[in-house]
Length: 398
Ligand code: SF4
Ligand code: SF4
Image 1: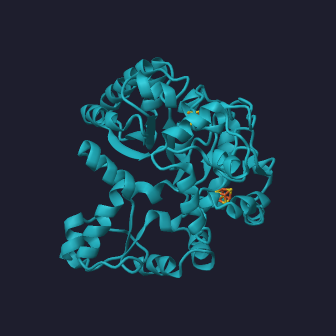
Image 2: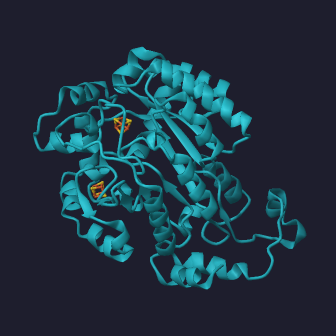
Image 3: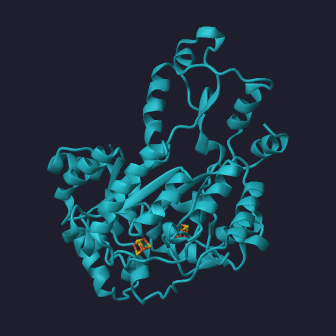
């Protein structure tokens, strides 16, 4: 481990035990041992210290197994996110081809010009600056509000990340030309999450306004074919936004995910935080957002009142930082598209950005309305899990 990173870990905002674990790891060649040997202690590796690098969905079962064997978190193991608790987002594409009804991009209340794309040169400068400023950075999200698959040079960006040893997290509506998919899958992104809100056009095309079910469906099959063709290890996931109208279609989407070899996860469908903020401030919502609000399984009023009860709790978005726009400006928060911390990421160091974020008036306003605890999807995981078991006899993660 380079010493500069080690010093940074032991001196900064990271738990001291992490630095200690790394110290205890010692130097020299590191042997490769099987998971069974780790658990049984064969070969003298009794209760070693290590970092779990499993994907977030699998990490719970790994931790359960380890703690069952007497391993202690913080002493014997840490999670990879403990080494780098922040995940930066880079909006490589400031363009979206849809007008989803829950998303403020789709109306003119907060005009958000369909901007442009980050250049490959700028992208490279951004990622190299992030790597210098954030020790242990291992993954970046390549989206905030736009669809990264629309970027004409996405394969080049993925190649830069691979060469630098950085994972690429992509979320998409998958409504793109099928021919574009081959180069993208060939470039092996780390994660590819494809959002879905129904099976068939009836409900999907209402929530994902502007999208076509036939294109989405065809492209899912093409992604699956290409993953096999290139023997790609990209983690592909169908991400289902559950609402009052589409809940029974979950079964069909799960069948499709199984058939295509994708992971499946489901979340509560909800209007984006900007609409919740408008609602609290008595600013009328556009018709499309009213429709999205009507479809929410838990009403916006109930979600806001639950948020108000935990207004003292921290903002779950604090680790999604920094959020760099396609034009290099830095957004205050990935949940809101109108407020900026700085005009030029490349000329603002991370310490300055942290200061600006910590004193942001916009964040203060958000917290004063408890909106920071409204868009907290994890909080409703249990609810969605139980509901899908009851209605479809299926879990929400597969
Ligand atoms: S939710 Fe995503 S895909 Fe839909 S309009 Fe907003 S940015 Fe585009
Ligand atoms: S306080 Fe609100 S605006 Fe600030 S980061 Fe959290 S969710 Fe975003």
